[in-house]
Image: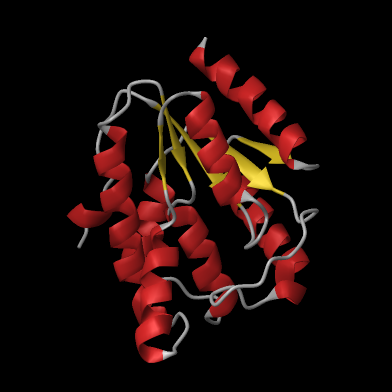
Length: 186
């Protein structure tokens, strides 16, 4: 299990989209990957939990978090080998840790916790809650976005992660993200 959560070495800059559900992370991840002619790492939890919902009509449970984390790192490690410029990550293990602590009585599996803190990224983009809520099978807490935003920001600050707050419409967020990634690439 430990090996499956380990971040493999790569030759690219790694950027993470980070924040509450329905704040534009996936849209922006795709836009940034397209802009840089690179790859993006989708959020593995979406596929995993959609399959669970479709097959069992159940939402996320604590026992799902480690398989989600393993799937996320497998995707990231594979896709990091396909670029030498910038890898856009739609999430990371720190985000899974935040959700675990917020939804499951303040707890996080010790192995997940260790790797969430050990894995490193060059920059985080914290997405603000000024985007319209879009419901789907998996999004379940439209009234929790402010609380979750604070939890995500706190995690970045507590763990000394470099981050930029993204607010505004899609074009404003994309422009600001590109400016910061361009600075990293120089």
